[in-house]
Length: 294
Image (cartoon, rainbow, N blue to C red):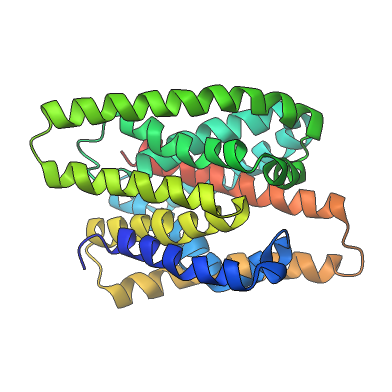
């Protein structure tokens, strides 16, 4: 079971290559079909990977009694609400802040050696996810990010800086390779990290942005987080699965109710609200996992 997350990510890439080639008309540019294709892994492990945050807080001593639990839940819920309304009022500023938080979150969370990760590897992993879609699939990326209340003119301007970020990424990879080969004794670990870099590069180059992100998010990022917490919380796979169910089901019911009340009047603006709402919900998870947990 060693490096199950990497193997699942590799398997998803091999599986999706023939699907996207043989069913190109069905999935190319069709975001609804792409979401439907990944509907199950988006729920589990995707959505489920943030459902252990309460257990993480208890395990790390942030929650020790009922009062601290109520206080934690109040803050945990308030953060995305504040972030959401701030995003609505200042979309461009909050969008950039969200991208910066995402780079740190993906970078820190995906490092294989949590106790030994370097800042260079954190940046490489985070920049991969954010910059490569803009580099290789600019039009599709602009179309997708337009659902974040960000206008296309702003995204076109921002995309220029993503080109610089891409070249910075290449430089970081070169520095990481040189440093790892000269200073890090565990060469097998270096090969493993390098193989993940290659897989990430191929994934975000070959597949459309939404498909590549779903594959990465579900089968590498979310799976790795769940496996880490399985070890940290000393859980078996069955216990891990059932512990994630309550919060996952509550979240599904919440968005099902939203859909029920909006089903007769779904338009682009409401889709934007849902996308920004979902993104804002991740902020508490990001802060907990990367700035409190560690």
